[in-house]
Length: 185
Image 1 (cartoon, one colour):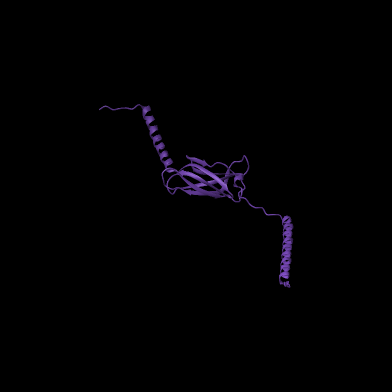
Image 2 (cartoon, rainbow, N blue to C red):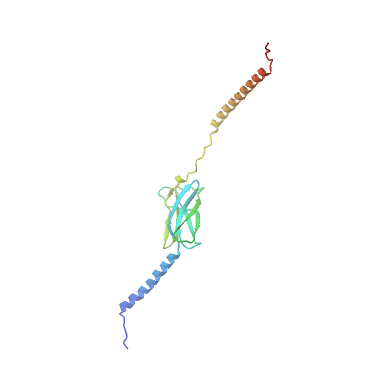
């Protein structure tokens, strides 16, 4: 019987390739099991940041959005201590999920929402949202007391004049109608 011998270099190469193939298939399997996020969009209305996430993954899996804030121009974004969560549905293809994060009491110059997917997938970031877009809705400012006091006095005087004039007119009508009637012959 004849024995077949592999060259030592071929055996070493095969020994190195087998674990690499197993590792790459294992990493592909774990990538498939983690959610995939395509994009995050944000907008602001008053003191609430709202947005959409387009993602796909296993039903019931929860994605956590973290709000980042930038305190001054040129500074790095830092966590603002506010989060929102979306729960993935099953379905084919990506789905869109709504979220909202209250920003009342924050004094940042800009905001950004992020989802950290893990070491290999990285971080998905929303576009930067300037805080000026989160201005409160139109509010009627309160008038100052020095303006209100003279205006209210003028309205009071005018209403007293209208009431007095109305009384005089009524008296004149009553007095003329209830007096003696001319007799015609």
